[in-house]
Image 1: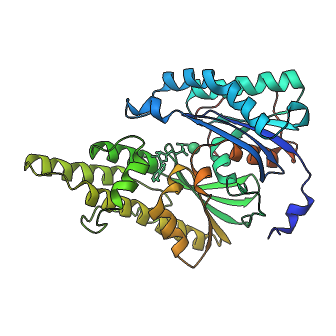
Image 2: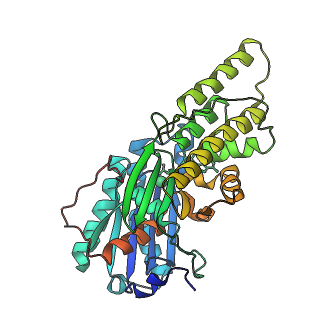
Length: 347
Ligand code: KG4
Ligand code: ZN
């Protein structure tokens, strides 16, 4: 049973979700904002690994090559065709312009050909709605409002107060690097492979998180974050070991860096949840896959915390289908000349 009685009054609808904002080509069919009829993700990680990060032109070219077969697979796995779909939801932004356009054009073409409504979804809203998705199709404990949402991805780190569905107030965000970006840059400094987050996590598992006391930017009096000082502190230690011709203690440095990031994210989020009288906390975005971060949030007992299962932390289309559903049932559909918005803020 859902813990949210209002869920019962939500109308029934099936949404085809499409996501191409960065380096995953994804499509999914979601029923009633929560049930996963299919979810297909074609990752480009191997293609970009040799560049040490996402190469935008390579990403858009690869989206063009795979988008239609990914959509076909999603429909086939759901045993449906477009006549059984109520609307098409697509990531409109933020993201890489050339990548967003591929998903948007595919969505527009299908919407036009099959006379279905088109819904542009904010990628960050999608990440938030991954907590409404039930990957094993069990009843999901849906988050309760007001909700304090921490978004931590490769491009964004921000705190939002969510007072109801689709209603956000941004409290603060990073002043420099996003948390995921810091993971990616520090991994490069430590000679670890792309993507940096999982590499740092792996290295950290064999290290001592108190070996180095890296700085924590508390930015008291604001709900903002900053990770550039931490990144510079890691660089300074790397240089010191290099200058002394000593091997870099990669595992201890990874563990100490990760501990500093987790400490700042947890403390500021819980403080904000207290200050804004949130009922619950939600963590979303690629960095929410981090084991130490998950343990820290789930280990505190003051607030119940929603963190998506690992399969829904990084980019996927199930989350876009879910957010699209909550827009669709409010009548929030878009015209077919909708443009992508590479810098679209959530609020
Ligand atoms: O949400 P996402 O897939 O794409 C964006 O919207 O940016 O997030 C990707 C980010 C990358 O910076 C990646 O290094 C990070 O999420 N990430 C992690 C982990 N898995 C992915 N960071 C820390 N620990 C992880 N296990
Ligand atoms: Zn993302």
